[in-house]
Amino acid sequence: MATPMHRLIARRQAEANKQHVRCQKCLEFGHWTYECTGKRKYLHRPSRTAELKKALKEKENRLLLQQRSFFPPRVYQHWRNCRKKDQEKKV
Image (cartoon, rainbow, N blue to C red):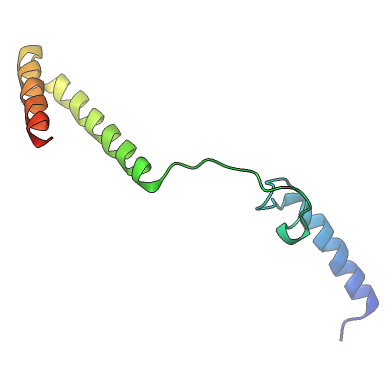
């Protein structure tokens, strides 16, 4: 059974640990969500689709940079024009 001293020590440790806790509602440090008296803050997050499209675009750009360094400029330009035509046909 917990003595009053143990309860006091546990309470003080919990208070000390709160300094590193971020509230999920107002995004402030120092209190738990169920203790929050503030308003919920809007945090814009991109959709998963937008994140995936961005990652694909970055991967494609990296690939293009690698191909640029591999091919002479005229060959690269021809390849790029053909690719644009293919994309226009898809639409």
